[in-house]
Image (tube, rainbow, N blue to C red):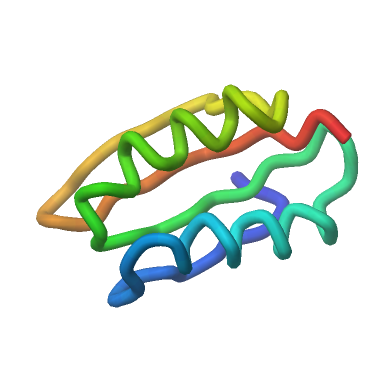
Length: 75
């Protein structure tokens, strides 16, 4: 279970990334943030976000048009 969940459904790029960046500040180092999004572009966006910020993309999944990302905050 994630330490925090961000519901970014209905938001388009770049809002899911911007909200995730802000929310990660409230997640302790080593903790996880679950992000839910309906923007198909968020798949590539979150992969790039984690690569550039050094956070770990633990899981990425899609189910019925909802994309779920689990990000481990590296601090």
